[in-house]
Image (tube, rainbow, N blue to C red; front, side, top):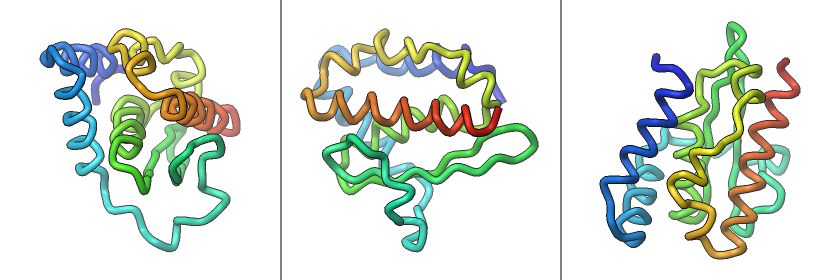
Length: 137
């Protein structure tokens, strides 16, 4: 498994391949399509991320000191955004997650190219991932 910095750099490099944000949105949609199937029985209110306009479920398991995430959303762009976060933070320790500033989100221009409601959802996803890490320190 690559390091957290390598994972973030890979995302920045992947997004730099696209000149237009329309292409970046399409890439996000593809990322969302690649999420593992999220079991229906896990789509419970306690797994819903608060603050997202669309529904986003996040399931977290701690194993051997690392956090493993699964997620789903009922909106395609949002599903891509949570998929992107999982791609970077899945299998990391709580300390790694808490020590990170999530700056790659700014580097790729994601927040500034989202609608205000989606940007709020992104913030909620990041905060939820951080809170899950805090529970597992």
